[in-house]
Length: 236
Image (cartoon, rainbow, N blue to C red; front, top):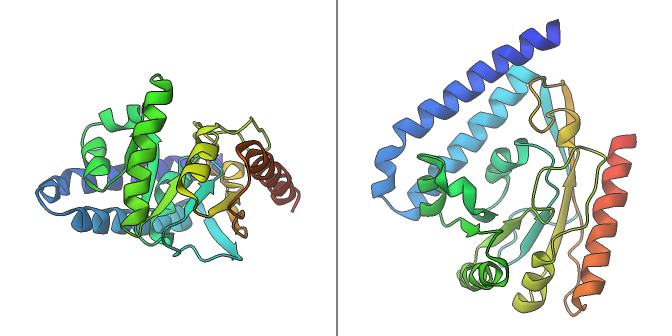
């Protein structure tokens, strides 16, 4: 009962603040990409505070690679809504690659697009990947880091699926480092779950996968890191 009441309070506060912030930020759409990103960073920081205070969820980061590196691709495990928002303030102006459907969400979609986010239409196959690759190259050349969820959808903690081959295409075509990032957010903030469980989300940033591997070798290595390291986190 305590968890239900606490989660109810958290959800009311969290979504009220998100909705109010989005509405108040509408005039920012007339300003620059940097201003929009400043708003996202603010919202990410506030979200982290609300999650800690009202849901009792903390974060522990173990990073062998800096989250502020530029011109790299971060391949991030996707378990819940937590990483889609709270990771923003941990990176140095990241560009998120996300499914096109999210761009249709009122206000959010416009804010995401204005901040440089890259949309992928999963129904458009090779054409969508080619378009995304062109934009990723442009953003990397501008000095941005790229954040991708290579599973393509949220996965329950402890559950795995083969990674989408798009991440391998981006790795080979950009010839830049891919840094794996895993965590166990779904253990405390389950995907599509109402109850939030207090505890500490453990986030691990691993050494970059070296360039020069073929696509199959790269995917095998990234898959192995995702599976083995998430399993380790869930046993801790």
